[in-house]
Image (cartoon, rainbow over all chains, first blue to last red; front, side, top):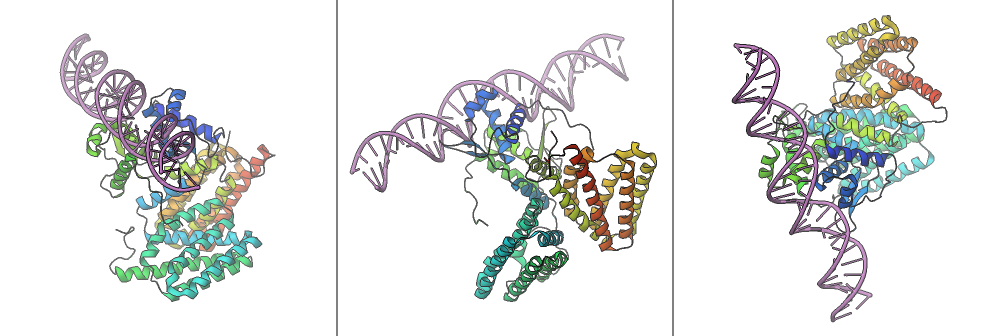
Length: 253
Length: 253
DNA sequence: AAGCCCTAATGGTTAAACCATTATAATCAT
DNA sequence: ATGATTATAATGGTTTAACCATTAGGGCTT
């Protein structure tokens, strides 16, 4: 660990960034509040408009502000979300050329923990939510392959619901990131077979059932198996398409 | 899931950002490589310098570029690190959207999975690396409380080694991020007692032993307990310092 | 009441200049 | 020759002043 960070704070816009950031974190600027116009801020900070705008770009990129043009426009304080973490995590995954296998394996582990925690912490209301989603999934099932897309959506919502029930926001956005990055593979490689929908549905039934009965280990086991089965199907389909590649290239063209 | 994203791509600098970002991700701009000077880029993209600089600010904030002033200076492509993820996670913690307890719980889960995988996949060479680190930890132990800092460093290195041995880079950088954000709390709240070093050392011995014997469940269990114990110590110390707060504020003053 | 247009406020962009920093080259003193 | 000093030029950082594009709201026409 290095004790010191590089000095160099000679850049004026950085100082503006820090001041505004501090104001937001300290609560002196509240969510949804509008900052003064650029020309006013220019006066306040005694900097040129270009410099001020560079500061605003940074704050916008950090997710602390959104900027709207036009008369009613200006810089508005954003609610703090997990979006930034998800985005940067997604960047790492894309950039590091993580393989699909790695991503799927990671998902397997995390979904296992999430299911375990959800089983420990679910309330009646949570179970009802899950069962409601299951019911909708069942309806898709009855519509057959036409409802494939919707079915997958509901599947994802069930997983996210479990993450929420687990009661730790970190799992929620980590899982969200994983889904954002793995879905495109599923769409690409998963065979659209009705049998797969049934299998998937049965898995979900088992997971929710375990959660309802507050059986953490069973829930974790079922969740892991569920994800693993998904992965198997997909890797098989992938091998059929690209028989040469074992683990395969880590990103689609 | 929303089908569409907000249109609004009228902002020129955003287009510049995307082009450069694409070039970096596609590998057409490599790590350490220098981009043309601002005045040249101005010509290339046919934009004003102000607009170009707004684009550079965004890319800098994303962690893709660093900018150095002076003759040899310019915009350089950065190696990809977990810094961005760590920063945004740190931001969430400061905003109190996630608590230290959440982070510790997440770590517990992930370290469990990592230990399990490491036990399944370790080779002789890996065991030797772990035992080498253990030996150094033991030396610290003999030096007593003076070697506290170094001991913690070695502890972290053992955890990271396990993540590497687990063979999935996602665990590696996720865990790196967690450590980046949780270490400062440990430093702040962990009581510097020799007994704690011993306890910690025994935990590590057990984990490595389980990995060596290729007993995944034992390794996972030991790793979880290890992290949980750390957490307990810290929360206890934290409560002693701030008896009022249950979960407590998540950031130091 | 509906639609249109004008107006003013606001962000987005451009242009040209100057300042501050820094690596390199040239110069000078020893 | 060598080491220190100075000059030079390239580069990012900042300022200024203007103009363009978008937008909400008011007022007008129909």
